[in-house]
Length: 347
Image (cartoon, rainbow, N blue to C red; front, side, top):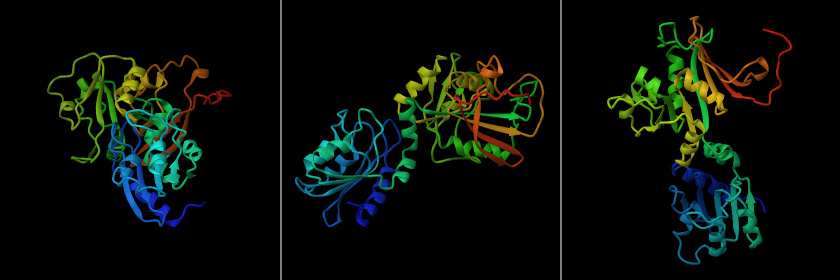
């Protein structure tokens, strides 16, 4: 049975409802319950970890048996497991729902399988309605689920000859205002921004996302890695979010901790040492290299040791986009570990 106009409209409504929920360890999900004639009976969304899922939130607004014979329109496949809440697939079956239309399959090995359970109970199930829009809404959560940790972007600014600073250590500003504004826009799309204690002590960054002097609506949680203490009057303490401090250099453990906190995306901004450590650890899912048309020379490289001993060990990249930013250029790339070595000649 094809998706009808009322169900299509309900999915659009469910996606807007889902966006009201918080980003975190759980996906943003919305649900709309339709009567057999296509009227909206109830709607709901997931309000955060430990709260009822979207389907149950919607059903809770109905009287007993009011959903019997109805259709549930949901942005994600109803779950099939018991966690802090029970399986939504079972809740829908027990409520008497006879048809379910959903956008995306649940990728979880434990949570998935709700559609099969519904079909086994005689419920008519349709999947894929507005899947692209649903995917865009929870893209960060899906990537974090696939990786088992946050998606990590490593950013640096460099001269054309690969330097992050001049011989005396000065680095403000290698790039121009258009590039710096782009960095702030990208910060605002991340859940957390990461630096090392060296950057905090040297530059005293605020680690906020700004448009000029104004704070952007979404602010990444500041994360500081390192054993040296952060001064009590450091700018990071005035951030809208309380900073997280990690007195360890175990980046995999830090990524796991951030994932457990519901952080889906991380923006690494802390200097050559930290950037190199993330790349060396295989924790750079995306690279943002802001390249300025200046020459600095010297030894202050944008990246230091990343574990490459020979050309055969090179961390090869696929450039997804070249973005002109005033006089500067941004390379947006991802690491391609399976790329074939390209050492037929020197360049």
